[in-house]
Length: 310
Ligand code: IDC
Image (spheres, rainbow, N blue to C red):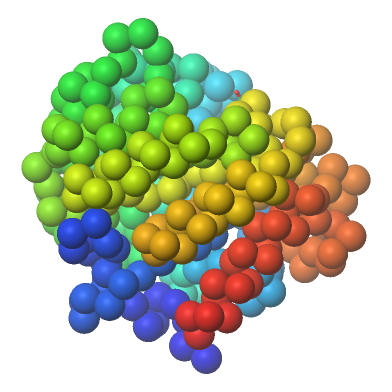
């Protein structure tokens, strides 16, 4: 069977939708790594193959923290992190999957703090992968903090986007939004002038409910392309209970609009958001008993969508 990438190839944005060269709608569905520095063992061929063939994923997001422990800007092994990204991108290419390169700001809530490094990073990444139509660039995971308004984020985006466009003129770029990538409605009201850009919306279903779903609807109604490059169905700490009711409401919204979605996270960390159980040491070929409640929900969603879209 043809892979999702073989079927759709290079993507672009048309209106609020992600589409392929023939303007057919595309829905990227997959998982996000946890910090690449922390769980490098999950970046392996068998894992990605399991996600593709057993779970139904067509995309992997490669999350590289900038300022948490071992982050790119906080003493992390830069060459090692870039080697993991390279491995992940190449695995995705070989398996006919899409890859998202995520500059995962978090405690560094203002993307300007490390904009010089981001510029250098994305210049080199886009030069390296400019010819790889399966690669998307996510320029700031979750802007947050006092003063980090949409104009501030937009300013950063307007600095990084042209750098990526030097080598990847048509790649899809994902831009974080204020308040941990929730304020997509504000971005919609003051959009960035770029043809192939989408706005990040992140939700954790037990924390984020009707109010955030209303923001998503408002942004879409205003014509802004929204991309869910991170979510889980527990609370925003990555822990706590799984909220199946809210998760179902999010899933309905996702399906109504054909939104792309990436589940946090491909790891066996002892927390609710992890897809793999903490007592499981397998790094691929997970059976039902190896997968957390969150993971089972995610796998069900991915499987159902892959089946409907085969
Ligand atoms: C969390 C991880 C957790 C880690 C922490 C670091 O799940 O293991 O210790 O980061 O501070 C986000 C962030 C994402 C968070 C996640 C859960 O993008 O990095 O991961 N989350 O808190 N936004 C909302 C929730």
